[in-house]
Length: 169
Length: 169
Length: 169
Image 1 (tube, rainbow over the protein chains, first blue to last red):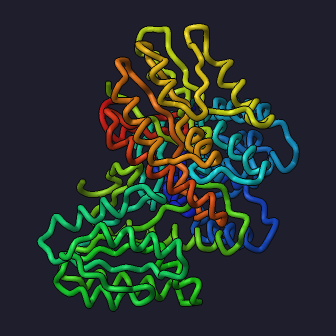
Image 2 (image 1 turned 60 degrees about the horizontal axis):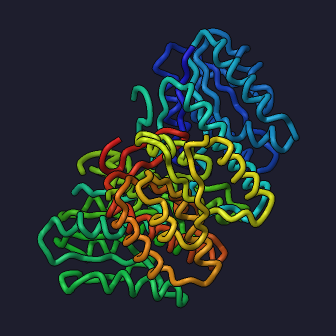
Image 3 (image 1 turned 180 degrees about the vertical axis):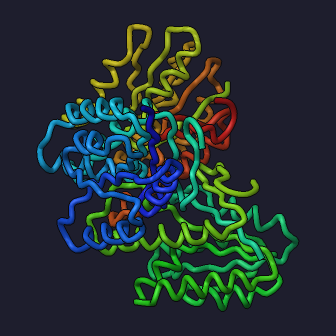
C-alpha cells in the first residue's frame, strides 16, 4: 500500500504533522520508534514524544529491524519516527545500508494499511568537517530520494507548516 | 494586531524581504535590532544592514527586552531583525526562554500597528556535535513553530525568493 | 540568453534534475565541471556523476575560469555543476569574488544557448564555529541571491523533488 513521506529539519514539527496524518485513519495506530535511549538527552526527547501520544497508539521499538516491525504492525495504520535515526543506528552498527533499504521498500510494498514515514532533511548546512558526518549526510539524502520517488505524497515541514512537494496535502 | 513571520537561512535575503513587507505601510517605521556588536564580524554585519535603511527607519536596540521595544514602537509599523539573535542573547544570559516567549506573544498581541518578524531556520543541517548548539537549535525551532502558528502569514526565503507557507504573499 | 538556477542541499538530487532540464534541448550538451579531484572522496563523487552521463555530454573542466568555459561551450546547451564548488575554489585560491561574479554574469549574458546552473543551499544549519566557513556561507548566499535575481527560473530541490521558486517548472 502507498505511503506518505514527511521531511523536515530538527524541531520543525514533522512528528506532530505525521501523527495528524496517521490519525486520519481509524485507531488503533502503531508507532514504530527507531530511537534508542543511549543518553539522557535522547531519553528526554523520547519521553516528550511518548507523552503526546494517547492510549490509541501502540509503540513498537524498531531501532534496527524496521521491516519486521512494519510487518508486525499488521492492519493498523503505522507511523515510523524516524528513518534518519534508523539509518544512524544501521551505520553505527556497521550494517549494509543498500540491503536494508531494499528490505524496507519490500516491507512497505507488503503493507495492507497506510504508513507515514518521518525523515530529517540534513543536507542544507555547511559541509561537515567530520568524514563520518559527510557519509551519513550522503546516505540520508539518498534514502530520502529513494523513498520520495516511491511515496504517494511528500510533505516538507518548516516551522510546523507543511509544504506539499508531491501528491496530496 | 496580526504579524508576518519571515523565515530563512543565512544570507537568504530575509532581512531585505522583511524590509519590503514593512515598507508596504506608511513611514516612519521602527527597526527593532536584536544584534549586539560583540566582535568586528558582527559590527560589520550591523553596519551593512544599517547602511541599507534610510531616515524613515528609526532604530531601537532590543537585545533582550524585545517586548518593551515593541511597546515603544507604538503606532509605527515595526520590523524585528531578528528573533534568532534575540534567542541567542537570552540563552547566553541564562534567561527563562518559555517566560520570554510568553511575554513576546503578549507584546505582539498588544500591538496596534503591523509587525514583521525575521527568524533563522537553523535545523536543516547535520546534528551539531556541541550540546549547547543542539539546545539552541531546539529552542529556535520551538520558537519558530510557536510564532508560525499565530502569524497571519509566514514566508520562507531562499536565494532572495519568497515561498508562502501560510497566509498572503 | 536566460538561464535556470537549480538550488538544493547535499544529495538532494539537484544534479540529476539539472541534467534533465538541460536534456530538454537537443544534444550535444556541455557539462562544465567545477570539481577538482583533490582527494579520494571527491574522485569517487566525480566518477559517480560522470558514469551517469552518456556520450552526448562533453565535459569541460572549469575549476576557476568558468566564464571562459561558458564561452567555449558555444552553441551547445550547458550545465554548470556546481557554482558552490567553483566559489570554494576561488576562495581557497584567494581570488576576487565580486570580480569573478561580475565576469560570470557577463559570460551568462553573452551565451546564445540555454544554461542550467547548479548551486548548493548551505545556510540552513547552525552558524558554523569556523570563521572561514561563516565567510564561505555568506559568499555562497550572496552568489545564490545575485543569480536567482537574474535567472529566468529557480528550482529548489528536496529529496529529488523540485519546488518552483520563480519562473517555469
